[in-house]
Image (cartoon, rainbow, N blue to C red; front, side):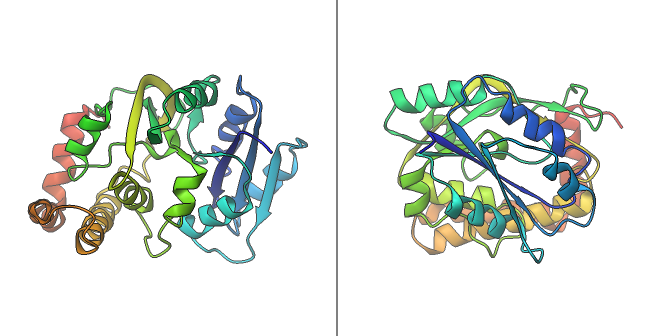
Length: 266
């Protein structure tokens, strides 16, 4: 049984897939399995995955396109590791990412969800000046929890017992399914972000457009509303939904203000 299961879902991800997969296979910590769900891709994703001959990889081909949340849950159900590590198909893990996270989780039994710092890259893999500071300690994370998602998805490592307790991702969420899961987990357990840049997080044109930003705001708002209705957090946090509503109504202002803060240049 591997110590950690790395899960990845991919749909038409041929452009960056190989670098993402290779970054996991080249980890300094080698007691892992990599479970990849090919979510009915119509590009060269399937051909790329067939080229790998590594016993640590399990490829699951979905007959129909089921979406990222359901695909990730499929990977979790097929996994065997005590820890579940997330990897998106367009990002890159640093070679010591898994080793650093396993060591921290083994030492800190109270931490259920662990992320890391990151650095953003563009479509060509070049580092760019677009970084937003992430909180580190559990206290800092919980203070910021209703303002934004304090974790970069590709940095997340979760104890198997915890992700099973919460039933994995909510498959009704097209976007922000990672944030919704984070909200549920941190309503009961502690989280932490290692202050080391262990992920290269890709910011391409698909992620940086107003239409997607507005949809992301909408699903993040639904995630906050869901956990508040379930009584997982104090009702005083409803005030944050008003801010979400303003951002949703005025997406151009929110989007360009956010770009300005990140010092992006296009």
